[in-house]
Length: 359
Ligand SMILES: *Cc1c(COP(=O)(O)O)cnc(C)c1O
Image (cartoon, rainbow, N blue to C red; front, side, top):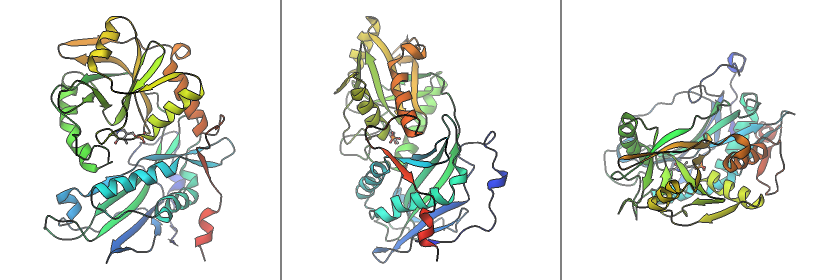
């Protein structure tokens, strides 16, 4: 890894009490370029724009995939990643599906650790605060030829994320649009999956919803995901979520919430979840909670589910009655090193990790 530290840090201008998520970037980024059949040097450099041509293949043919994860700072100023190997393997699953070269562990995990170590001042501390990390892999060859690119870029950037208490959301069960299909790219974190979901989401928002519940593309009879999150419901005392498949993305939060639930003795079922089952459970008063789970906001509770002509209202339970909130709290405490980690999920970023690359 080649490290080129900024001589012009913006950290002094970073106000932890007042910043916007997603367009405040830390001082550095990681960049690695692929050509002639191999990856070049891993470079950690000042964050900033890079020159690209509009003939870059990734823009035209959508060979692009990304990851999303977070670094957390505890009360002593130590910084931790959370299950980064899951994101590493998922990035490479996406790479294979999109015919892009896989990234190495040194690039992905090593790059994350070096970036977070050098920019550890950018990891805000406090409940719900974190540094959001965005690895991305995309085709960069300059050619308007519809084929696999021969040049790629892998990059990692970081943007601080604030504590924010997500408002309960209204979701609409899709009876027409689909996010993914059998044999498609739904399980990959393909950039195009997001591009394709914006329009149906916009239409749902025009009807007063926040997000779309994606259903199976054949019959729209089964729950798949909620917006860009995995979906879970609690019917009586059991948390139910669809099993991952080639249409359902294998979320790290989904897997973690399931394992936390098992650890806390909450019953879970991973199986097909029919819209009709959720509808009937609501009618019978057995649908206690429904929510989406993902890295960005961890958990979004549903206050309303739109299905055909009906809008099913859901009570949002107070924290001490909400099983979902209990699971979320265990998970976020674990991530921030404020609670036990019976699973060994926290990965500490040692102070001075990046020094080994500085000569
Ligand atoms: C990223 C993503 C998720 C959530 O995955 P996490 O690893 O929990 O952040 C769920 N569904 C889709 C479609 C996604 O892209």
